[in-house]
Length: 425
Image 1: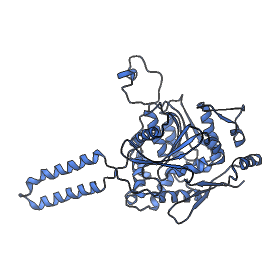
Image 2 (image 1 turned 90 degrees about the vertical axis):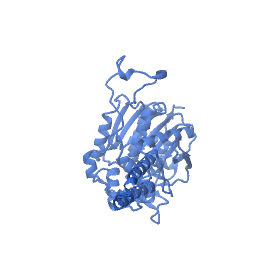
Image 3 (image 1 turned 135 degrees about the horizontal axis):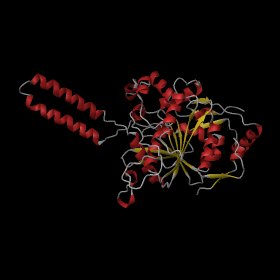
Image 4 (image 1 turned 60 degrees about the horizontal axis):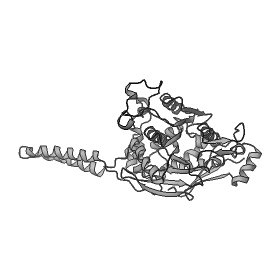
């Protein structure tokens, strides 16, 4: 069986970029069934022609693009992409024959991080923090005014430095939203589309954003399927091994080879960017993004705060602080447990990504959390083994009660997944 060809269109390299991911041959019978159901599975298109594009003004005042993949079902599945990519990174997987059997039962909302859609202009984000800093600089300048007659040379130099600092801060007041702010912006998207609840499907930094949202919005999220997740900050070792020295160049519009290597380590795992076709595709995707906005998302991820997760050891004791309620029975404490069902996923070859997953799993509620290590895969599990990942996702949906089967046993093939019957309205 021919390995599926994935195409990314609209990049700035002057032509389409293709790659062939690994594909496990499920046998002649399955091949014929896929041909009958979907036509030839050899070509998967990564374009947005069939998607509805929406530009939403969020409550923070920032516009955000959402691409909707409609179906007859009102069940919602929300995706959030990783750094260095955008929503197109999910299209190949969701167009995969085995995944299409599942995705046709959902309306899929692909969220783009601010300024990461095709042809995006450089975004300007103004925050009160910038205004406060500007006022501080102006206050410093006013304090120096009395010294003007005493030592004009010193004053000229000092005021000049302050003026330069002030000008650079005003001109460079492009403060990209933090991961917490990106999570808060999902609330506006959910309200805009009238989504009552959804399944979250995240990758890398997008997994972190969805986890933050689910922590504070337990009534909206019923499940999270998170690829290459992390709940901690960058460790000392990670900061000094994965150095993003060239990030200022990216802010000025230059993508360097060092930055691409750092993205490879983040996507695949350290030293595992071996599939040249996948590497070429994702490099082209990263280069097609607005560099300033891309640098902002990377910086927000690098400077992320830890997610406030605490592994529960039992129900709270009566009268304890964790059991204290505020007005109208609401808790006065910050939530520390994601109440939704969660599945954490990565490739077993990526030891550094597996370690981050294990750390997050140790902070999760074991009653509502499962984790998967996809065999013989790096962090690019959607590309390297889409068949296995699609079946694992179907198992996850089954475990949380979103579908049932008219067979006693689930096999890894489209023939069995055709018998998936959704039971969630």
